[in-house]
Length: 151
Image 1: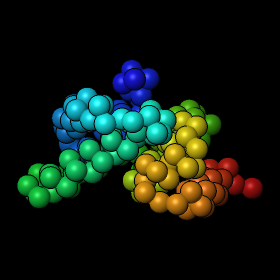
Image 2: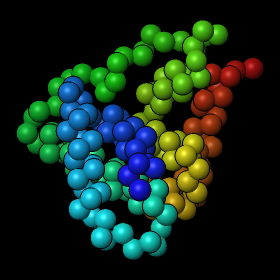
Image 3: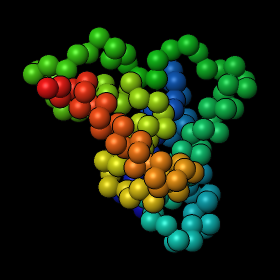
């Protein structure tokens, strides 16, 4: 199960980690998945459960770091602020640039959408309604089209 979701786990860890914390957060997510595996009842898809555990672990990790004042004022990823989409940029660079501009919730939602999770499954992970998920996805698509596709 972990192997099928390794990309998702790595993305969440990279999205929520700061300077040198990626490995620690990644390991913490794996540990929490292992510890909570027995609680997986199969009521939702494995991907949905993995997203929920990973996001909750990442949020808990960040809150703990803030309380200990360990988070520094540095970007989550290598700065891509100067990156403007051009013919030379590959699709992954453009997508990463766009996702860096989104808030954490919207970036996670877009990742779930791109991974093929349903609105209902994404809603369960984020704790919002399916209608809110669909509305956010529409807004995210419109924003991408406006900024990267144009007229």
